[in-house]
Structures are given as C-alpha cells and as structure tokens.
Image (tube, rainbow, N blue to C red):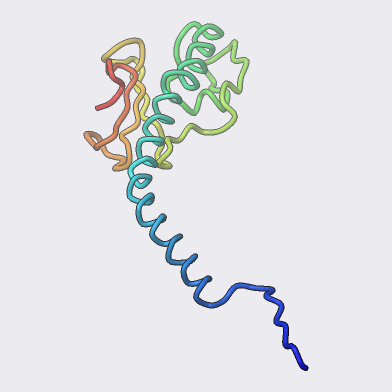
Length: 139
C-alpha cells in the first residue's frame, strides 16, 4: 500500500491572486481619499512656519537689532546694518512646503511686516496661499 501524502507548504496561485485582488480593491478605495490630504498638509505646514517659526525668528531679530530685517536672508547671514545680530535665527533659507521662497515685505502694509506663501502656484493670487495677516490664514 502506497500512500502519497502531500505536505502543503505554500499558497496556490489562486490564493495569491485573490490576495492581490483584495489589496488592489482596498488601494482603489483609499487612494482617492488620501490624494487631497497632501495639499492640505502643505498648507498647514506653511501656516505653522508663518505663525510660529518665521514669526519667532523675526521677533528675535527685532528684539536684538531694534527693527525687523530688510529681507529673510538676514535671519541666516549677518547683514552689515545689524550691530547686535546674535544669529543665525534660522538654520537654513526659509522655503515653503512647495519649494518656493516665502515672500517677505518690510515694512508691511498689513502690520509691521508681511509674510506669505503663494502656495503651489508660487505666484501671487494662487490657490492655497497663506499670509500672516489673513484672519483664517488662507487666501
């Protein structure tokens, strides 16, 4: 009497295909919901930079030197007109989450200074822009 026992040590092709199909369906359901979240996260990061990081660095510069800097680069490299410069106030040149430089104007038209990101477009009036004077911080 010969008995042929077969040890099952793996998955069949059908089982693997079912797993791949199930994963594909789950990704198809979840991916569209997450697609818009990255833009919202970038807007929130720009808002945090403007409200906290850059504003704090600008305020520290003003405390040390008696006036706000003429340009944001003055926060990383000592300008010639800042006798009490105790920086760098930032470790690197500030860029927004889209890779564009923040827009800084001193003196500002909306306060001591205007600080903004134009958003993904990088141009004034672009969607998703953030500014320090907007009540909701979005343009």
